[in-house]
Structures are given as C-alpha cells and as structure tokens.
Image (cartoon, rainbow, N blue to C red):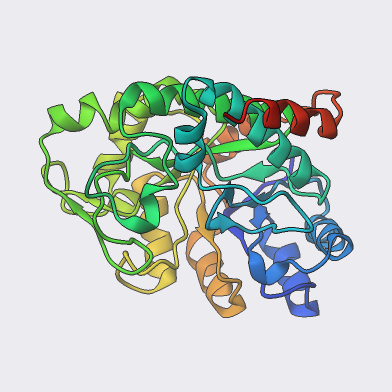
Length: 330
C-alpha cells in the first residue's frame, strides 16, 4: 500500500488546478475533504472526486461534513435537505434511533452517488444549556444515554451506505461556550465529571476506524489544546481506548495559535495521525507538508486498518428508505 502523507486536504474550487494536481501527487495525502465551494452540479462533483483520486493514483477516501441542518455541504437538488440533528431527535422521540439510522443511510447513499465515501459524523458531543449555539443543535442529545443510542444509529446508517463514519469531536466539545472556529474554548471541570459524561460518550465507539480531535483546553488536565496536547492524546488512546485513525479538526481554525504549519507539526508530535486542512489554500498545504511529511509507522498501520473497513453499501432502494423514514414522522 502507498506510503501516505500525514494529511487530509481540501482543494480550492470546482476543479483541480495543474498546481494542485502536481502537489497532491507529491504529497500523497491519505484523502481529501470537500466544502460548499467545491460543489456545483452532480456531474461536476463526481468529476472532482474522480480527479482527486486520480491525482494520487488510488481509491483514496473523500470526506465531507454532511450532518444536516446548517452543516450540510451537499444541498438540494443534489441531496435531501435535513433538519438539524437535535431537532430531528426531538421530533421523533422514541423512534429517533430508527429514524436517524435511516436518515444517515440516505445521506450516505447520496454521498456515494457523488463519489464521496466518508462523512464527519457521528458527533458525540453531549449538549449542555451553555453549549455554544454553533454546536448545540448539531448534537444528538443532552444526556449520555441518548447520545450513545443515536450515535450508534448514525454510525450504522453510514456503514449500511458503505461510507466511513468519523466520530467527533474527541474527547468532547459539548461544554464549549465559544466557537472554536474563532476562539479557544476552555473547560474547567474535574476529571471525574468529564469521565462520567463527556469522555464516556466516546468509549463505546472506540473501535470506529476514524476519529477527529477537538480544539479546546481541559484546564485541569493540560493547559494545551487537546489537538496539540500529548497528554490529551494519550488520554484518548489509553483511557478512552480509541485506537483508530485520529485526524485533527480543521487545523486552520482560529482556536489554535501559531501558523498552520506550526500547529500541524505540534499535532503530529502530540500523537495525532494526520492533519486535516480544509480551506484549500495551496501555500498553506505546501507549508504543512514541509513540516509533517509522511506518516509515522504507527499512523500508517492505523490508516491501513481504517481503510480495510471499507464496506459495500447494503442493496436497497433509496426511495424505499425515504418512505420508511417518512412513515416514522409523528
């Protein structure tokens, strides 16, 4: 198998430039991620995902954030429009787990139809009264039992569709009262409280192939943000049992200090397997690869194990999935 660069990259626009193709061929990233700026028509998205894979010469995973609600990159008419996850969980009540499994099976099938085979979900952050509004309605519930139940359903829906699930934001973002795209949240809770709720939401999913870190500080554990904290990554690995492939949240988010290259190097030194860089700026991607280079042997092994979990979609009529979902609506 290819030796991977320790990164997952976005691209700038609707089609790859000559410079991007050349860079990706040299960098050999594990995979790619798409955003709204990369999406126009179905044919265009399929061509772009094909060109991304062709640039590195193998069937690399292409990820996206397709949660529903505000965080949904594929929009109608390319894909189904969804309520925010927390809103759907609330309206389905006792039927929420079944509905959410169907919902994410549909999402996954729509992604696969566009050449996308990884989705950054389930989101296992436990919502609180003070959870920042950017995050709150993206959650699945405000208690541990509900988050785990819905998280399992979301995971199974992805797997039914043949799409890699990526659990996030490890080790838990629900207590954050700031938007980490802009600021660095700080959590001042004792370890016992964190273990009981926020960290506990991820342990039942420790065997998932991919996970994503959170950009926030747990002040009573380490003053460094979790993504760049060796102590926090060790906690995720040792205490939470997460042994899958661990990518950072978008390294260009403003929660972290320093240049993107410095942040990237720090995250790899802390124990993350790869840097996720989303804004598509080629100069930043070049600087990142200059600092992080190829994956470590351990990260390469985890990457190969994660990719080996790739599944074919369950043979089902997507119209039947929609009908089954709609029949559950109260």
